[in-house]
Amino acid sequence: MTHPFLDLAPLTPAHFAAIERQTTSLLSTRQDVVITQGEALLPLEGCIRSGARPGSTALNVITGPYGQTFGNWLRDCGVTVVDLAVPFHTAVTAAQVRDALAARPEIDFVSLVHAEAATGNTNPVAEIGEVVRAHGALFMLDAVASVGAEPLLPDVWGVDLCVIGAQKAMGGPAGVSAVSVSERAWQRFAENPQAPRRSYLSLLDWKERWIDTGRTALPHAPAQLEMLALGACLERIESEGLPAVMDRHARAAAATRAGALALGGGLTPFVHEARDAAPVATTLRTPAGVDASELVAKALAGDPTLPLIAGGGALAGEMVRINHYGPDATQGVVHSSLAALGAALGDAASGTAAAVDLEAARAAVSEAWQRG
Ligand SMILES: *Cc1c(COP(=O)(O)O)cnc(C)c1O
Image (cartoon, rainbow, N blue to C red):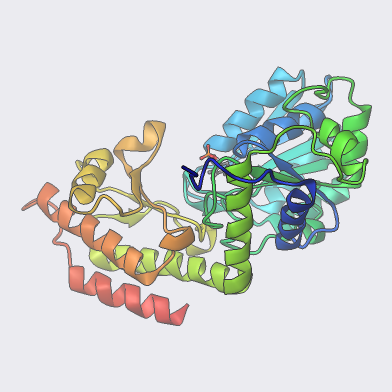
């Protein structure tokens, strides 16, 4: 008996190349795009191990948990790491990056996360890109949580390595990712004696065996289901239109923020300024005495399909995340998520916290959604 997942025709090099072109077009880039057969941590680690020269100095901007991971990989490569950390409730500014670069002229690599789904903030990459370009460092951007949710223009912004994954705002599969690689970045990789070769982390292998040979033979069997899902998700974005997809995410974030403020009960936006809040996901701080993990569990008991999750690690007790991305970037999901949290909060804090106002939350969500 044939099975739709199992008995697939082989994915041809031409089909693989077509999906690669669709990805290139999503990023409006003229640079090479490498599709990587694993979730986004694979190209992120590949970029750092390829671009970070031992004995060199890198600026690692930390605005959430991923920045911490990058710093560890960089140090592992023998790089001196200058960490620029800002509180997770805010964004880094171009001026902070400029000062950090001016203080250490030898910095030749900068890593930055665009939007942080884990903490709900987003960084002004256009302005930061200008500063990095003026300094001359290679610029790596983790755009996994921004692609599809907000404007992302790697070429215009001078991003040398732009890493994306399909599983957030693109509404696609988690097991495949991509990175755009500038000519400068290829050069840096080629000159780096420590850049991975004959390795799953090697971007140079892909260039040599796929791009430079005219994309006629795949170096190894592609992750077929994920590639087909990536192609399907790119087609779905094309048919809705990327601006419309981004608009849904912007509305979802604005509506969630406004709805949470109107809801009362002590839930407050984790990211202080609305302009620093990421369109991909909204983070909320629970009131004192209300454990975020317990609150989320209670809210999900009524409807386990809602995109609610407690913060990771140390934030598990105090942060709730509403992952209003991909197909969940809708007014209905935003409203149901806040209603479920409001009901759970009413239970959790009965008598102690300020009353929750579900009707006010509904009206605020609807008003903010219309306003866009
Ligand atoms: C989600 C995300 C990733 C990918 O992480 P997963 O392990 O696939 O969840 C990478 N970077 C950022 C900023 C993300 O938000």
